[in-house]
Length: 383
Image 1 (tube, rainbow, N blue to C red):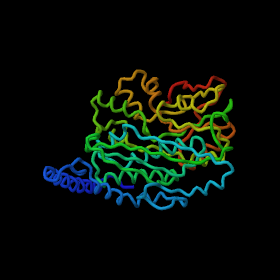
Image 2 (cartoon, rainbow, N blue to C red):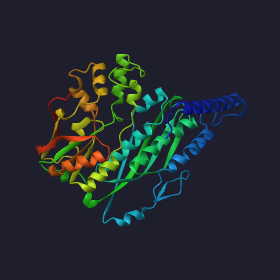
Image 3 (cartoon, one colour):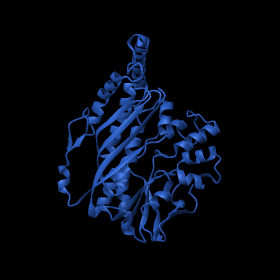
Image 4 (cartoon, rainbow, N blue to C red):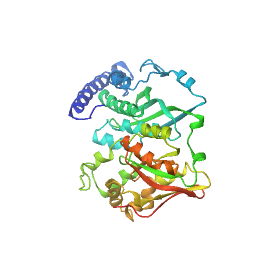
């Protein structure tokens, strides 16, 4: 994965200049030659160059089951792996990273949002106990700058390596007139597999189960429309450096989402896990409720953790009453919890030890009690 530093910026500048010269040349001859794709704003040569730049990064994600490389019309994955399963269930998920890409575009930092994309997709798969197998992506730019495209894909490839899934293909498109020259968006889809008898979910959850919270790395990729609105209303720029942070707020916002796949798979294999909940849009309560049976509630104790400073800063900048305990904040952001595990109470200690070995900060955050299928937060945050 490239760093997005000075060397990358120099490469982008060179590509910018070359691409701009191509557009200028085609524009000058438009009247003489008639309409061309390049004159309309689509540079197929730049797209081909981007594919060559990303080829090595994509190759690093290959699993033994991958057949061929990028450049074909479809990615191929050897499904004979599934013959080793008694009753394999295929799981699929698709997602994007929302308006976090606008922060990346404004800062000119393109090497992290790809990791976010993999996290949003692969961590949804692992919730049911599925091992992610392969992923495809879709990237659209207002103007293709090969180095920029390759840097985004290198981030996706780095995320796939962390998640253990192969990046088997994708599409890169140029949409002049639809997006501005600096604008872009990304999305992806992945497929995984889980044994039917190992499928996790609400039907396994029992009264008395323990809820373990796993720390997030920040906002992940949710709530950025509210973030941008808060910054605009409070007139804070992305280079603003609040004393509560050790870096500018823009760089804090771009912290890549944590990928929990390896830790969750290890936990599911060695502990009595009943369900996982990926804490994305909707916050902790809404996402936990998605994996609860109709006769049970999850009660989460706010006193068990202190949300990272970025959440309190956003609440204060937005004038959101009651600080980070406000209903608005808890309905939008993860507030420091990126994944939750619901498991048998006597498995909690082992689970915490295993997660520590996986370098995941985790703690007992609550329990499952008789109820009606909802989740609620009680108490006040520590700190």
